[in-house]
Image: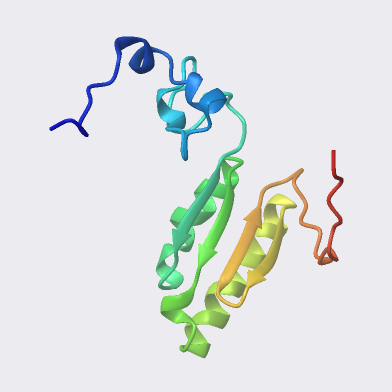
Length: 132
């Protein structure tokens, strides 16, 4: 099988060369000095969750109290007007309590931020790219 070649040891040891060679993708997890997963900086994390009812509010509010940013998908309760209104009202109370911010990101997504992180609710117009 001539088409099947074993990688040279130098190629396996130095994944940064993939950038210079122009390979189609790079596995960022194998680059030296980078650990996959959340950063250990101690700062806020962006957490994604699917919310399916009012009963999840205490757990989610604890995450915001800890300083995390939440992106919540409320698709499971989007058709239940009463549950949706009750859930959003309680999330607004949590945000008021901690001086955070809340905004709809898309049709079924909400973003909740802790104190010190605001959400600009104006949509940006098309941004022209600078060509180098």
